[in-house]
Image 1 (cartoon, helix red, strand yellow):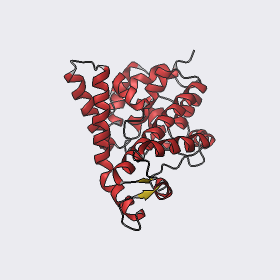
Image 2 (cartoon, one colour):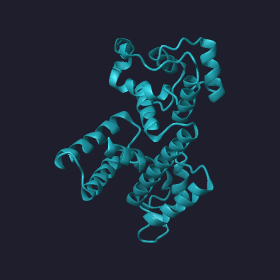
Image 3 (cartoon, rainbow, N blue to C red):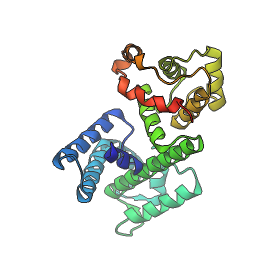
Length: 262
């Protein structure tokens, strides 16, 4: 858990479920080799393996984008041409700080100082920008959790609950998933009330992790919301039958502390 959390903090864990499971197998293997722990050297080796595996995942897709922008077919892209691909990959910087960070990454991967990028350099650049974006988003989520009054341990627990509810890895939850959580917590809330809470958080009635934390805070303030009952396991098993994913009592039991507000 600590190793995975550290990797996530550095943006090294993919969001795709299959890819993430593959990376988690690499982590398990590293822990097995280290007899339950990983040395600093072993951790660096693990990062290298993860990055190599991640580049394999994206290889074909990035080759296609690279070829589309390499108009003269010389095997190189200018910085401007490479930057035009970022929007297609969802990697456009959202603020001045992130723009400066991207510029620094561009200069860093251009190892021959040619001002152009070959495919390998481009691939490494995309990987570093992707990792940076994930790490920045995680930091933003942590900051939001702190602002809402959650401890970092609680934010970690919320992430796990969010992943359990986000059965299709869409990165957002809607009314159905939020209703499922309310059912687990035995909170009797009308459809209008639930819709009103989601509308106050998002105009699209879907919430990302930050919105989900805001949702939990609002629900946690409701007098009708008790701590999770010990007898919740049967309901969890029943609700976990869909989407070929079964929710476990252990996973959702973590939510207990979120609703016992001090």
